[in-house]
Length: 138
Image 1: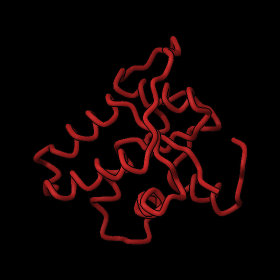
Image 2: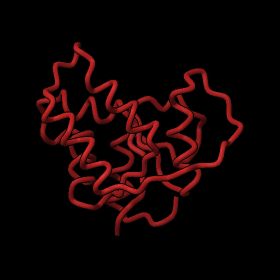
Image 3: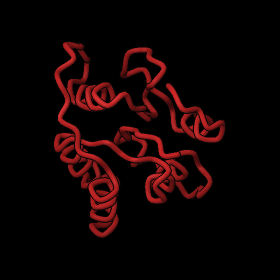
Image 4: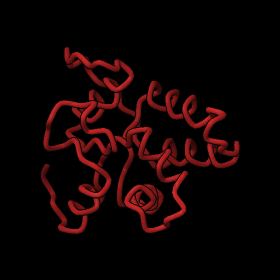
């Protein structure tokens, strides 16, 4: 059973930076590539991924960046959410939240404190546990 989820940028960064192939962030990205997780995106999310992944401090090669962006677009579903009227300290986080809300999907993030406390906002490890237990409803 596939799970629909918005993948926060920090999850992708952590997956690319770690040397631990069994880390929860790597396993989330593997689940995206295998079709277990269907990533939801909006062009603003793709733009953020692109901008952040190209930051010099990360030293990610162009091939890796393009592979990630292509996979999200190829295996994902583009969403055009309605505004939620929510106020966020970092307005860049709002689109991730709105896309998840629009499609009743999970939002997978390593920075849960950036979002309201909601059951659908989960860490990579929590998402893996949901998948392991085959939870169907969030």
